[in-house]
Length: 126
Image (cartoon, rainbow, N blue to C red; front, side, top):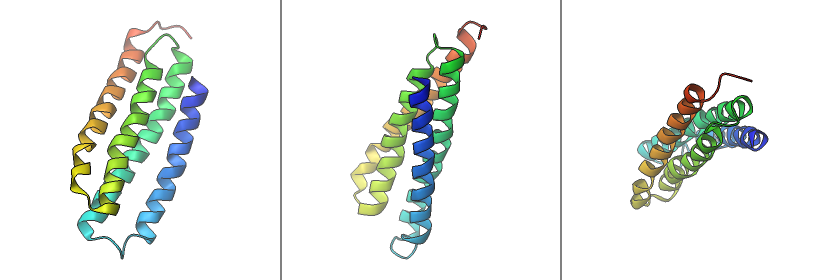
């Protein structure tokens, strides 16, 4: 599982760089400042949680009996739901997509809680 999470974190970071560059160069003249800020928020949280996936991979290798894999899946879900909904909202202007964003935020929070649980509640071996 830790290899998958590490690869997912690396791919998420790669996509974060690509989407950030796309926003900075291709969207600057095409979106309103408000929608560009929405897109940039998606990129920022996408990036934070790419690194969180790498942390979950490390935790899964160190404490395999913990909830690190659950944390990794929650971080992935958060990137898709939170950042993905913001990307789509910015690009399409469809406002109801904003209703999906909090579900991604909840996934992020739950992921951090699972990672905390893994670090504090698992055995100190490894």
